[in-house]
Length: 76
Image (cartoon, rainbow, N blue to C red):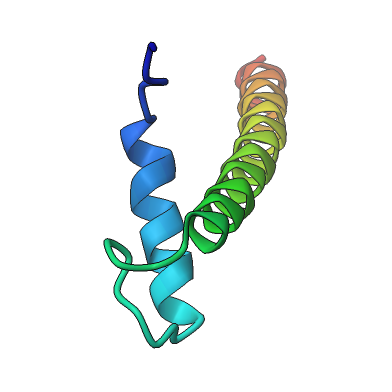
């Protein structure tokens, strides 16, 4: 039986979500269902943040390009 290797980032975020929900049991003693639900929330949160970061980086690159164009025009 092969064990799926956990993503450390997902595990950290999942634990934070789990603890924020104020479960009676600790992460290690919690139900497999609760831990897996927290992992799914974590994967979704990370995916959404990655999407936002991509949009922000695109906007930043556009702003830098626009600033460069304006600086070039002002220099002439």
